[in-house]
Length: 118
Image 1 (cartoon, rainbow, N blue to C red):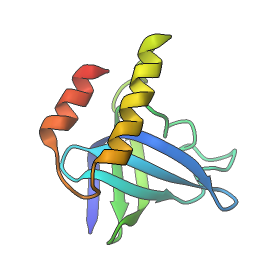
Image 2 (cartoon, rainbow, N blue to C red):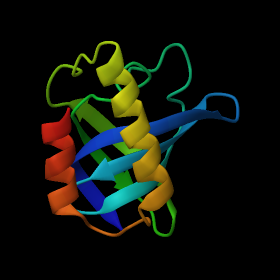
Image 3 (tube, rainbow, N blue to C red):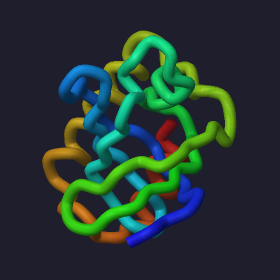
Image 4 (cartoon, rainbow, N blue to C red):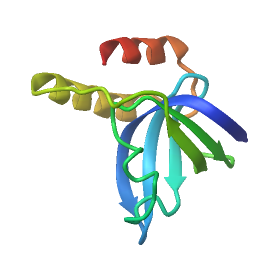
């Protein structure tokens, strides 16, 4: 599967190997996806600061299965500033989505509700 510039939000990220990141993202057309962002964890990567929670993104990826490879990304807008309790609520919603949504199950209504929530 190859996807170009799909609307997405990062739900969760963690380091992987020396300089990569494992991401869980929510997309409008593909639902929740697992992505490997190769080299995005290095200090020189332009993607490192981009792949943050609550930032509207356009992402491209290639691959099949549960874990695909990020091939590019860009911001659609500025990160959405969440302060105090709103930040905690946003992080809690992200954790719920990661734990309860199956991968590769499109949920355009849920994506729209997530945008409104932020």
